[in-house]
Image 1 (cartoon, rainbow, N blue to C red):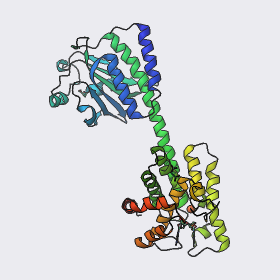
Image 2: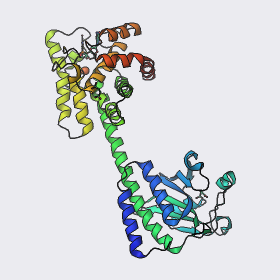
Image 3: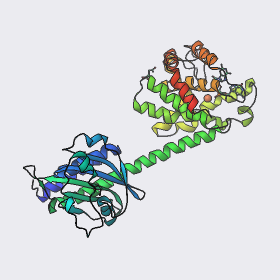
Image 4: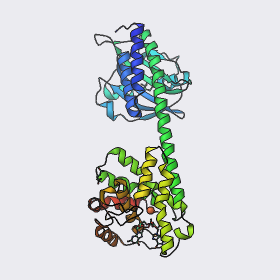
Length: 382
Ligand code: C2E
Ligand code: SIN
Ligand code: SIN
Ligand code: FE
C-alpha cells in the first residue's frame, strides 16, 4: 500500500476534518485508534492518555483476539522509562521495534508479555508514537502492533509509516485536547450553577440537600416520562435553579416560622418572576430552560397557580415535573413554617391533587415509581 505524498496529504486532511467533528471523547479515541491501525496496517493497537503524571491505558483493539476489544480493563502506567509507552511519553520520540521479544538489554524498558500469554497472541513488531499537541505537550501515546503486508505476514513498520503516523498523532492530540477542554468547561459551568443554587438555598434551608433531591427527582420523573436524554440532562442541571428568585425575597418572610399574611404572600409569589428575570436574558440553552422552570414551577394544572394562571399542557412540561417533585420534597421535610409529613399523608395529598395541582399523567407515573423516589430521598436525606 504505497501512497504518494499528495495521496498521504489528502488522507490526513480528510481524517483531520473527520476527527475534529467528533465531540464525544470515547468515540474520538476509538476512531483515532482505528484510523491509526488502518494507516499502519496494524493487527492490533492501544491508546493511552496522559493524566497528571500517569498514563491511563484506555482502549485496545485487536483483529486477532476479538473478544478483548470491549472487556479489557483500564490500567495505569507510571510515566517512567521502564514501560515502552512510558519511555515514548518521556522522550517524546517515536519508537519502532522490530520484535518486542528481542529488545536489547541496553534499553531501560522491556515488553510486558502478560497479554500475549493470556490470549495466546504473539506481539512482534510494535510502533509506539507520542501524541504531542501544538504546544509540545504530551497528550497520550498510540501503540500499534503487528503491521501486516498484503499476504498477511507480520512485518516491521516502515519508515514511511513512521512519518505519516507522526503527523496523524499530532492531529489526534489536538483533537483530543479540544474535546477535553470543552468537557472541562462544561463541568466547571455545571458546577458553578450547582454551587450558586446551593448558595441561594442557604437563605431558607439548612443544607444543600434539597437542591440535590429536586435535581435527582426531576431527572428520574423525566426518564420515567420517556423524555429524551438531552431533556433529562437539562432538567437534572437546571432544576436546582427553580427557587433562585428567593434571593430577592426578604429573610423575614423566607424564614417566618408561621403562616404568611396577604402582603407577605404577594411578595413571596414573586420568587417565580424574579427567578425568571434573573435567568431569562441568557443565550445558554440550560439557563433559558432553568428560567422556564423558575417561572412555571408553581403553576397548577387546573389553572389556579401563579404567576400566570396557566393550565393543563400550557404549562411547560419542565414546570409540571418540578411542581410535583417540589411539593413532594416540601412535604417530606421540615420547613421554617411546617413539620415534615408522614409518607402516607404525602402520597394521599399527591393523589388528591391529580388534575388539580398536578398533571394527572405525571401523578400516575410518580406514584407507580415511588420506590425509586424514596431511594433518592433516603440517599440525600441531610
Ligand atoms: P417551599 O417551602 O419549598 O414549598 C413548596 C411548595 O410545597 C409550596 O408552594 C406548596 O405547594 C407545597 N407545600 C409546602 N408546605 C405545604 C403544606 O403544609 N401543605 C400543602 N398542602 N402544601 C405545602 P407554595 O405554597 O406556592 O409556596 C412557595 C414557597 O413560599 C414555599 O416554598 C415557602 O418558601 C413559602 N411559603 C409558603 N407558605 C409559607 C408559610 O406559611 N410560611 C412561610 N414562612 N413561608 C411559606
Ligand atoms: C508498554 O507500553 O510497555 C506496556 C504495554 C506493552 O508492553 O505491550
Ligand atoms: C412532552 O413534551 O413530550 C411530554 C408530554 C407533555 O407535554 O405532557
Ligand atoms: Fe418555589
